[in-house]
Amino acid sequence: MSKVEKDDLTRKRGGAGEYPRGAVKALWKGKPLGEVLQLEYGKPLDDADRKPDGLYPVYGANGEKDRSDKFYFDKPSIIVGRKGSAGEVNLTEEKFWPLDVTYFVTFDERQYELRFLYYLLTTLDLPSLAKGVKPGINRNEVYSQIAKVPPLLEQQRIVGILDKAFDGIATAKANAKKNLQNTRALFESHLQSVLTQRGEGWVEKPLAELCDPKRVITYGVIKLGDEVPDGIPCLRTSNVRWLRIETEGMKRIAPTLSSEYSRTILKGGEVLVNVRGTLGGVAVAAREMAGWNVSREVAVVPVDPSRVNPVFLSYLIGSGVSQQWLGDVKKGAAYVGINIEDLRLLPVSAPEINKQLKVVRHLELLQHETCRLESFYQRKLAALEELKKSLLHQAFSGRL
Image (cartoon, rainbow, N blue to C red):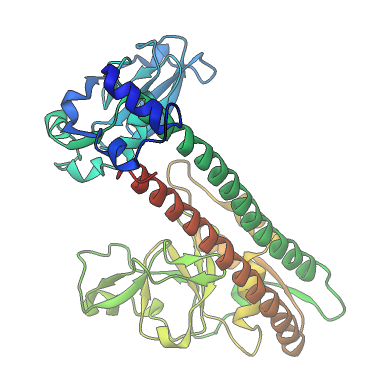
Protein backbone atom coordinates (compact mmCIF):
# COMPACT_ATOMS: atom_id res chain seq x y z
CA MET A 1 0.00 0.00 0.00
CA SER A 2 1.34 3.41 -0.90
CA LYS A 3 1.98 6.11 1.72
CA VAL A 4 -0.79 8.21 0.15
CA GLU A 5 -3.29 5.37 0.61
CA LYS A 6 -2.21 4.87 4.23
CA ASP A 7 -2.61 8.57 4.91
CA ASP A 8 -6.02 8.49 3.26
CA LEU A 9 -7.16 5.70 5.55
CA THR A 10 -5.70 7.39 8.62
CA ARG A 11 -7.82 10.44 7.85
CA LYS A 12 -10.84 8.21 7.28
CA ARG A 13 -10.38 6.77 10.77
CA GLY A 14 -10.45 10.23 12.30
CA GLY A 15 -6.70 10.92 12.33
CA ALA A 16 -5.50 14.25 10.93
CA GLY A 17 -9.06 15.01 9.81
CA GLU A 18 -12.21 13.20 8.73
CA TYR A 19 -11.78 11.99 5.18
CA PRO A 20 -14.85 11.91 2.89
CA ARG A 21 -16.30 8.42 2.66
CA GLY A 22 -16.48 8.56 -1.11
CA ALA A 23 -12.73 8.94 -1.26
CA VAL A 24 -12.20 5.70 0.69
CA LYS A 25 -14.61 3.88 -1.63
CA ALA A 26 -12.57 5.15 -4.56
CA LEU A 27 -9.60 3.18 -3.21
CA TRP A 28 -11.40 -0.10 -3.93
CA LYS A 29 -9.67 -1.68 -6.91
CA GLY A 30 -11.53 -4.00 -9.29
CA LYS A 31 -9.31 -6.84 -10.45
CA PRO A 32 -9.57 -10.52 -11.53
CA LEU A 33 -9.61 -12.82 -8.51
CA GLY A 34 -6.54 -14.58 -9.94
CA GLU A 35 -4.53 -11.44 -9.13
CA VAL A 36 -5.68 -11.58 -5.50
CA LEU A 37 -5.30 -15.23 -4.54
CA GLN A 38 -4.20 -18.63 -5.82
CA LEU A 39 -6.11 -21.91 -5.61
CA GLU A 40 -3.79 -24.82 -4.86
CA TYR A 41 -4.77 -28.46 -5.36
CA GLY A 42 -5.46 -30.65 -2.35
CA LYS A 43 -3.94 -34.10 -2.01
CA PRO A 44 -5.28 -37.62 -1.21
CA LEU A 45 -4.71 -38.95 2.30
CA ASP A 46 -4.37 -42.67 3.02
CA ASP A 47 -7.01 -44.19 5.30
CA ALA A 48 -4.18 -45.39 7.54
CA ASP A 49 -3.29 -41.75 8.25
CA ARG A 50 -6.82 -40.81 9.30
CA LYS A 51 -7.94 -41.00 12.92
CA PRO A 52 -11.03 -39.52 14.66
CA ASP A 53 -8.92 -37.93 17.40
CA GLY A 54 -6.16 -36.66 15.11
CA LEU A 55 -4.45 -33.33 15.78
CA TYR A 56 -5.43 -31.62 12.54
CA PRO A 57 -8.61 -31.31 10.46
CA VAL A 58 -8.89 -33.09 7.11
CA TYR A 59 -11.07 -31.13 4.70
CA GLY A 60 -13.35 -32.45 2.00
CA ALA A 61 -15.32 -30.33 -0.44
CA ASN A 62 -18.05 -29.39 2.05
CA GLY A 63 -16.09 -29.05 5.28
CA GLU A 64 -14.14 -31.08 7.81
CA LYS A 65 -14.33 -34.75 6.85
CA ASP A 66 -11.81 -36.40 9.17
CA ARG A 67 -8.82 -35.82 11.46
CA SER A 68 -5.15 -36.75 11.13
CA ASP A 69 -1.85 -36.34 12.92
CA LYS A 70 -0.42 -35.24 9.58
CA PHE A 71 -0.91 -31.84 7.96
CA TYR A 72 -0.32 -30.71 4.37
CA PHE A 73 -0.33 -26.92 4.87
CA ASP A 74 0.77 -25.07 7.98
CA LYS A 75 -0.92 -21.68 7.58
CA PRO A 76 -4.50 -20.46 8.00
CA SER A 77 -6.34 -20.70 4.70
CA ILE A 78 -9.66 -21.07 2.92
CA ILE A 79 -10.88 -24.41 1.58
CA VAL A 80 -12.88 -24.30 -1.66
CA GLY A 81 -14.77 -27.39 -2.84
CA ARG A 82 -13.36 -28.53 -6.20
CA LYS A 83 -15.49 -31.61 -6.91
CA GLY A 84 -18.79 -32.80 -5.50
CA SER A 85 -19.84 -29.90 -3.26
CA ALA A 86 -18.03 -27.62 -5.68
CA GLY A 87 -17.75 -24.00 -4.65
CA GLU A 88 -18.42 -24.54 -0.95
CA VAL A 89 -16.17 -22.30 1.15
CA ASN A 90 -14.72 -23.08 4.58
CA LEU A 91 -12.26 -21.13 6.70
CA THR A 92 -9.47 -22.86 8.66
CA GLU A 93 -7.12 -21.06 11.02
CA GLU A 94 -4.86 -24.00 11.91
CA LYS A 95 -2.65 -26.55 10.19
CA PHE A 96 -4.75 -28.83 7.97
CA TRP A 97 -4.90 -31.43 5.22
CA PRO A 98 -6.96 -30.56 2.11
CA LEU A 99 -8.15 -33.65 0.21
CA ASP A 100 -7.89 -33.92 -3.57
CA VAL A 101 -11.52 -32.84 -4.05
CA THR A 102 -10.59 -29.37 -2.78
CA TYR A 103 -8.54 -26.29 -3.49
CA PHE A 104 -6.91 -24.29 -0.73
CA VAL A 105 -6.10 -20.60 -0.94
CA THR A 106 -2.70 -18.93 -0.81
CA PHE A 107 -2.21 -15.16 -1.02
CA ASP A 108 0.13 -12.28 -0.25
CA GLU A 109 -0.40 -11.54 3.45
CA ARG A 110 1.17 -8.10 3.01
CA GLN A 111 -1.76 -7.04 0.82
CA TYR A 112 -4.73 -9.14 1.86
CA GLU A 113 -6.51 -10.15 5.06
CA LEU A 114 -7.48 -13.86 5.30
CA ARG A 115 -10.94 -13.32 6.75
CA PHE A 116 -11.68 -10.57 4.23
CA LEU A 117 -10.92 -13.00 1.41
CA TYR A 118 -13.11 -15.61 3.08
CA TYR A 119 -16.05 -13.20 3.30
CA LEU A 120 -15.38 -12.11 -0.27
CA LEU A 121 -15.49 -15.69 -1.60
CA THR A 122 -18.80 -16.36 0.18
CA THR A 123 -20.37 -13.52 -1.83
CA LEU A 124 -19.26 -14.75 -5.27
CA ASP A 125 -21.69 -17.72 -5.64
CA LEU A 126 -18.88 -20.07 -6.67
CA PRO A 127 -21.21 -23.14 -6.77
CA SER A 128 -22.83 -21.62 -9.88
CA LEU A 129 -19.54 -22.19 -11.73
CA ALA A 130 -19.69 -25.97 -11.23
CA LYS A 131 -20.11 -28.16 -14.31
CA GLY A 132 -20.36 -31.88 -15.10
CA VAL A 133 -22.19 -34.96 -13.83
CA LYS A 134 -20.15 -34.85 -10.65
CA PRO A 135 -20.04 -31.05 -10.36
CA GLY A 136 -16.57 -29.59 -10.55
CA ILE A 137 -15.01 -26.12 -10.68
CA ASN A 138 -12.18 -25.05 -12.97
CA ARG A 139 -9.94 -22.66 -11.06
CA ASN A 140 -9.34 -20.55 -14.17
CA GLU A 141 -13.04 -19.67 -14.15
CA VAL A 142 -12.73 -18.66 -10.51
CA TYR A 143 -9.68 -16.55 -11.35
CA SER A 144 -11.63 -14.66 -14.02
CA GLN A 145 -14.22 -13.40 -11.50
CA ILE A 146 -13.86 -9.65 -10.96
CA ALA A 147 -13.60 -8.62 -7.32
CA LYS A 148 -13.30 -5.17 -5.80
CA VAL A 149 -10.73 -5.09 -3.01
CA PRO A 150 -9.76 -2.10 -0.82
CA PRO A 151 -6.35 -1.56 0.79
CA LEU A 152 -5.31 -3.81 3.68
CA LEU A 153 -6.25 -1.42 6.49
CA GLU A 154 -9.75 -1.02 5.10
CA GLN A 155 -10.04 -4.81 4.74
CA GLN A 156 -9.13 -5.16 8.42
CA ARG A 157 -11.68 -2.52 9.44
CA ILE A 158 -14.43 -4.32 7.52
CA VAL A 159 -13.44 -7.70 8.98
CA GLY A 160 -13.62 -6.23 12.50
CA ILE A 161 -17.19 -5.02 11.88
CA LEU A 162 -18.32 -8.25 10.22
CA ASP A 163 -16.72 -10.51 12.84
CA LYS A 164 -18.47 -8.66 15.65
CA ALA A 165 -21.81 -8.60 13.84
CA PHE A 166 -21.61 -12.25 12.81
CA ASP A 167 -20.71 -13.32 16.35
CA GLY A 168 -23.91 -11.66 17.51
CA ILE A 169 -25.91 -13.26 14.70
CA ALA A 170 -24.42 -16.68 15.50
CA THR A 171 -25.44 -16.31 19.16
CA ALA A 172 -28.96 -15.25 18.17
CA LYS A 173 -29.26 -18.17 15.75
CA ALA A 174 -28.05 -20.64 18.37
CA ASN A 175 -30.66 -19.33 20.82
CA ALA A 176 -33.40 -19.52 18.20
CA LYS A 177 -32.43 -23.08 17.29
CA LYS A 178 -32.40 -24.06 20.96
CA ASN A 179 -35.84 -22.52 21.46
CA LEU A 180 -37.06 -24.34 18.36
CA GLN A 181 -35.81 -27.66 19.74
CA ASN A 182 -37.27 -26.94 23.16
CA THR A 183 -40.67 -26.16 21.65
CA ARG A 184 -40.77 -29.50 19.84
CA ALA A 185 -39.39 -31.34 22.92
CA LEU A 186 -42.07 -29.83 25.15
CA PHE A 187 -44.83 -31.04 22.85
CA GLU A 188 -43.26 -34.51 22.59
CA SER A 189 -43.00 -34.72 26.37
CA HIS A 190 -46.64 -33.76 26.81
CA LEU A 191 -47.70 -36.17 24.06
CA GLN A 192 -45.83 -38.95 25.81
CA SER A 193 -47.42 -38.07 29.14
CA VAL A 194 -50.98 -38.06 27.77
CA LEU A 195 -50.61 -41.36 25.92
CA THR A 196 -48.89 -43.26 28.74
CA GLN A 197 -51.18 -42.20 31.58
CA ARG A 198 -53.85 -44.65 30.54
CA GLY A 199 -57.05 -44.64 32.50
CA GLU A 200 -59.96 -47.02 32.67
CA GLY A 201 -61.14 -48.47 29.37
CA TRP A 202 -57.84 -48.41 27.49
CA VAL A 203 -57.37 -51.65 25.54
CA GLU A 204 -54.18 -52.84 23.85
CA LYS A 205 -54.35 -54.54 20.45
CA PRO A 206 -51.99 -55.15 17.52
CA LEU A 207 -52.18 -52.38 14.92
CA ALA A 208 -53.58 -54.75 12.30
CA GLU A 209 -56.72 -55.34 14.37
CA LEU A 210 -57.64 -51.66 14.19
CA CYS A 211 -57.63 -51.53 10.41
CA ASP A 212 -60.37 -51.68 7.80
CA PRO A 213 -61.09 -55.42 7.46
CA LYS A 214 -61.27 -55.03 3.66
CA ARG A 215 -57.78 -53.54 3.40
CA VAL A 216 -54.32 -54.49 4.69
CA ILE A 217 -51.29 -52.55 5.88
CA THR A 218 -48.84 -52.49 2.99
CA TYR A 219 -46.35 -50.28 1.18
CA GLY A 220 -46.66 -48.71 -2.25
CA VAL A 221 -44.89 -48.30 -5.57
CA ILE A 222 -41.56 -50.11 -5.71
CA LYS A 223 -40.00 -48.16 -8.59
CA LEU A 224 -41.40 -44.72 -9.31
CA GLY A 225 -39.92 -44.26 -12.77
CA ASP A 226 -39.69 -40.93 -14.56
CA GLU A 227 -41.46 -37.80 -13.40
CA VAL A 228 -44.85 -37.26 -15.09
CA PRO A 229 -45.81 -33.56 -14.84
CA ASP A 230 -49.57 -34.19 -14.84
CA GLY A 231 -49.36 -37.59 -13.17
CA ILE A 232 -50.60 -38.97 -9.85
CA PRO A 233 -48.99 -37.43 -6.73
CA CYS A 234 -46.87 -40.04 -4.94
CA LEU A 235 -45.77 -39.41 -1.35
CA ARG A 236 -42.27 -40.44 -0.24
CA THR A 237 -40.39 -40.33 3.06
CA SER A 238 -39.35 -36.75 2.29
CA ASN A 239 -43.04 -35.83 2.25
CA VAL A 240 -44.22 -37.81 5.28
CA ARG A 241 -42.82 -35.98 8.28
CA TRP A 242 -43.52 -36.18 12.00
CA LEU A 243 -47.29 -35.50 12.34
CA ARG A 244 -47.49 -33.59 9.06
CA ILE A 245 -47.27 -34.06 5.29
CA GLU A 246 -45.19 -31.70 3.16
CA THR A 247 -45.99 -31.60 -0.55
CA GLU A 248 -42.89 -29.66 -1.57
CA GLY A 249 -40.74 -31.83 -3.81
CA MET A 250 -43.56 -34.34 -4.27
CA LYS A 251 -43.14 -36.62 -7.26
CA ARG A 252 -45.87 -37.49 -9.78
CA ILE A 253 -46.09 -40.88 -11.44
CA ALA A 254 -47.94 -42.32 -14.43
CA PRO A 255 -51.61 -43.17 -13.71
CA THR A 256 -51.05 -46.66 -15.14
CA LEU A 257 -48.21 -47.25 -12.67
CA SER A 258 -50.35 -46.05 -9.77
CA SER A 259 -53.19 -48.37 -10.76
CA GLU A 260 -50.82 -51.35 -10.50
CA TYR A 261 -50.63 -50.56 -6.77
CA SER A 262 -54.34 -50.14 -6.15
CA ARG A 263 -54.04 -51.34 -2.53
CA THR A 264 -52.20 -48.17 -1.58
CA ILE A 265 -54.25 -45.65 -3.56
CA LEU A 266 -55.36 -43.25 -0.86
CA LYS A 267 -58.98 -42.57 0.01
CA GLY A 268 -58.14 -40.02 2.70
CA GLY A 269 -58.00 -40.72 6.41
CA GLU A 270 -55.27 -43.36 6.27
CA VAL A 271 -52.25 -43.14 8.56
CA LEU A 272 -48.95 -43.08 6.65
CA VAL A 273 -45.80 -44.43 8.30
CA ASN A 274 -42.24 -44.29 6.96
CA VAL A 275 -40.81 -47.83 6.97
CA ARG A 276 -37.62 -47.43 4.91
CA GLY A 277 -34.68 -45.04 4.99
CA THR A 278 -35.65 -41.96 7.02
CA LEU A 279 -37.82 -43.42 9.78
CA GLY A 280 -39.98 -41.53 12.27
CA GLY A 281 -42.37 -39.92 9.81
CA VAL A 282 -46.07 -40.52 10.55
CA ALA A 283 -49.08 -38.46 9.46
CA VAL A 284 -52.71 -38.68 8.39
CA ALA A 285 -53.58 -38.47 4.68
CA ALA A 286 -56.07 -35.59 4.21
CA ARG A 287 -59.35 -36.18 2.36
CA GLU A 288 -58.15 -34.03 -0.54
CA MET A 289 -55.33 -36.55 -1.07
CA ALA A 290 -57.81 -39.18 -2.24
CA GLY A 291 -56.46 -40.79 -5.40
CA TRP A 292 -52.81 -40.19 -4.50
CA ASN A 293 -50.37 -43.02 -3.93
CA VAL A 294 -47.19 -43.72 -1.95
CA SER A 295 -43.73 -45.16 -2.59
CA ARG A 296 -42.45 -48.42 -1.13
CA GLU A 297 -40.75 -46.49 1.68
CA VAL A 298 -44.15 -45.49 3.07
CA ALA A 299 -46.69 -47.88 4.59
CA VAL A 300 -50.41 -47.17 4.35
CA VAL A 301 -52.38 -48.02 7.49
CA PRO A 302 -56.09 -48.14 6.45
CA VAL A 303 -57.76 -47.20 9.72
CA ASP A 304 -61.21 -48.49 10.70
CA PRO A 305 -62.71 -45.21 12.02
CA SER A 306 -65.20 -47.10 14.17
CA ARG A 307 -62.30 -48.53 16.17
CA VAL A 308 -59.67 -45.83 16.18
CA ASN A 309 -59.49 -42.19 15.20
CA PRO A 310 -56.73 -41.74 12.57
CA VAL A 311 -55.36 -38.55 14.17
CA PHE A 312 -55.25 -40.26 17.57
CA LEU A 313 -53.43 -43.19 15.97
CA SER A 314 -50.89 -40.88 14.29
CA TYR A 315 -50.14 -39.27 17.67
CA LEU A 316 -49.75 -42.68 19.24
CA ILE A 317 -47.44 -44.06 16.52
CA GLY A 318 -45.44 -40.83 16.65
CA SER A 319 -45.02 -41.01 20.43
CA GLY A 320 -41.80 -42.10 22.09
CA VAL A 321 -43.07 -45.51 23.23
CA SER A 322 -44.18 -46.57 19.75
CA GLN A 323 -41.08 -45.12 18.08
CA GLN A 324 -38.91 -47.04 20.53
CA TRP A 325 -40.80 -50.26 19.75
CA LEU A 326 -40.40 -49.70 16.00
CA GLY A 327 -36.73 -48.85 16.50
CA ASP A 328 -36.20 -52.17 18.25
CA VAL A 329 -37.64 -54.16 15.31
CA LYS A 330 -35.99 -52.24 12.47
CA LYS A 331 -33.54 -54.19 10.35
CA GLY A 332 -30.62 -53.45 8.05
CA ALA A 333 -27.43 -51.42 8.30
CA ALA A 334 -26.88 -49.38 5.15
CA TYR A 335 -30.62 -49.19 4.41
CA VAL A 336 -32.69 -49.42 7.56
CA GLY A 337 -36.27 -50.63 7.34
CA ILE A 338 -39.28 -51.98 9.24
CA ASN A 339 -40.98 -55.10 7.93
CA ILE A 340 -44.69 -54.79 7.27
CA GLU A 341 -45.25 -57.92 9.39
CA ASP A 342 -43.64 -56.19 12.36
CA LEU A 343 -45.60 -52.97 11.80
CA ARG A 344 -48.84 -54.97 11.85
CA LEU A 345 -47.88 -56.25 15.33
CA LEU A 346 -47.21 -52.78 16.79
CA PRO A 347 -49.04 -52.66 20.18
CA VAL A 348 -51.69 -49.94 20.21
CA SER A 349 -53.44 -48.88 23.42
CA ALA A 350 -56.58 -46.84 22.99
CA PRO A 351 -59.78 -45.97 24.88
CA GLU A 352 -63.20 -45.87 23.25
CA ILE A 353 -63.74 -43.41 20.37
CA ASN A 354 -65.24 -40.52 22.33
CA LYS A 355 -62.30 -40.48 24.73
CA GLN A 356 -59.93 -40.65 21.76
CA LEU A 357 -61.59 -37.56 20.27
CA LYS A 358 -61.21 -35.71 23.57
CA VAL A 359 -57.48 -36.54 23.63
CA VAL A 360 -57.17 -35.45 19.99
CA ARG A 361 -58.82 -32.07 20.63
CA HIS A 362 -56.46 -31.42 23.53
CA LEU A 363 -53.35 -32.43 21.58
CA GLU A 364 -54.38 -30.53 18.45
CA LEU A 365 -54.67 -27.30 20.43
CA LEU A 366 -51.21 -27.86 21.88
CA GLN A 367 -49.79 -28.84 18.49
CA HIS A 368 -51.26 -25.71 16.91
CA GLU A 369 -49.49 -23.55 19.50
CA THR A 370 -46.29 -25.56 18.99
CA CYS A 371 -46.49 -25.00 15.21
CA ARG A 372 -47.05 -21.28 15.79
CA LEU A 373 -43.92 -21.06 17.93
CA GLU A 374 -41.90 -23.18 15.49
CA SER A 375 -42.97 -20.89 12.65
CA PHE A 376 -41.90 -17.86 14.69
CA TYR A 377 -38.43 -19.28 15.35
CA GLN A 378 -38.05 -20.42 11.74
CA ARG A 379 -38.87 -16.89 10.56
CA LYS A 380 -36.38 -15.51 13.07
CA LEU A 381 -33.65 -17.81 11.74
CA ALA A 382 -34.46 -16.79 8.16
CA ALA A 383 -34.35 -13.10 9.13
CA LEU A 384 -30.96 -13.54 10.78
CA GLU A 385 -29.61 -15.23 7.67
CA GLU A 386 -30.94 -12.37 5.53
CA LEU A 387 -29.29 -9.88 7.88
CA LYS A 388 -25.99 -11.68 7.38
CA LYS A 389 -26.36 -11.50 3.59
CA SER A 390 -27.29 -7.82 3.81
CA LEU A 391 -24.19 -7.01 5.86
CA LEU A 392 -21.98 -8.83 3.36
CA HIS A 393 -23.60 -6.95 0.49
CA GLN A 394 -23.01 -3.63 2.25
CA ALA A 395 -19.42 -4.58 3.05
CA PHE A 396 -18.53 -5.46 -0.53
CA SER A 397 -20.30 -2.51 -2.08
CA GLY A 398 -18.25 -0.10 0.04
CA ARG A 399 -21.17 0.99 2.22
CA LEU A 400 -20.17 -0.50 5.56
